[in-house]
Length: 205
Image (cartoon, rainbow, N blue to C red; front, side, top):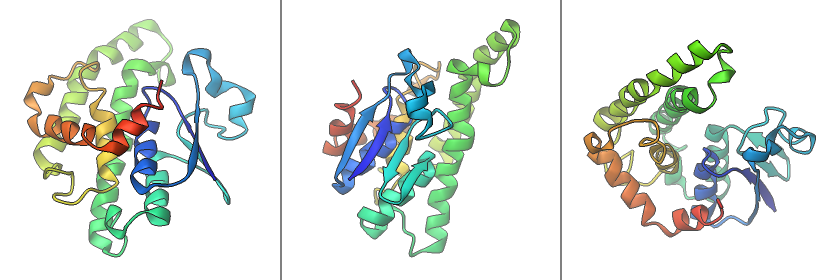
């Protein structure tokens, strides 16, 4: 059976939602960041990065959300979840998820985990002050250019959707005016209405 390591409020929610969507058998292991459990040896032996998610499979451990989502879709899901039979559409899906991983998630992390990049207080505060502006720019591009509706890729639910949903739940705390993002808000509403989303959220406490 698969084992997935998750943490409340983290990006690991995206992978957990997809596991529920495809009906995979798994065990969820909740890591408590407030107790620094992600930095303890027991977890570092599983994921030396000290981050979540980590997916323990029969063949080994996978980390990084983009990789885990593709793995779950390819192993358990219908073809349309990642459209790997269509090279261009699969490329678009990977383009979107890579943007979330490399740009949007990193911008968000500057508010909570700025010490990854700077040490002095002044630089840390300056970085945190910039988060609302940078996050707004990043997700406005999603709103205007990528999100087709009702799902990211249009009429078909894909691995992009749990990923965007998870990040969209951070926007208000990051100082983003979501009133100017009606399509993202509607996407969030549609995701919340799915049973898989509700089941995943119930395990994040």
